[in-house]
Length: 286
Image (cartoon, rainbow, N blue to C red):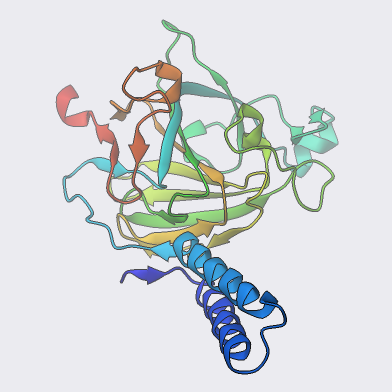
């Protein structure tokens, strides 16, 4: 149901009550040289901003088979074919001493998972050059959410949330916090979730905080089933969401900022739960 996202009612009501109270006091008791009514108007304007920011409109969800919808509102930053070249180390990997340490992103084992498309743990990726494609590659779509976009995230497809994990930068309790529209923001504090879809494929969804947006609020837990377009979380203020899907299974016609399109210089503007970002190509192969 359309309205405000969880967490939005308290700030909107609080600022509204403060604004109305200040206006009443300024009108009937003492305006204090006009400062009290001015304060009241400021509170009401803040309440309007909070209401706009925490808005959570209903969305028509496409019903076609074999599609994935956008997990976030915002502009498509880039769409890249990538390959896993490393993964988070296990205790056994650390004991063997085959761990590479990065001051920003932490420890990595220089080999991907045996099945990279299982997304069992966070992996390190590199772009794939034309002509070097492999069946284990993934497409990564990055969506930049400005402070003016709806910040409620939605499930790209029906399935089961297999795992959810929180990641921060190396040696930091929270952070780092780079601007969400920069490449380095992929290492910001983030929440990574893996969805097992009804067709048996897995996708990886990463909700990334930004320089201002420092709170990722998941709405679902490990083991919960989700519907396509279901609300699954929220990132407050400007931020970013990355979606990785098996490259051999899905195709996309999304125009991104990297494409340099005259009509979409910032990339296509996507709507969570409504805009189709990937389509299955299995039927074409058959």
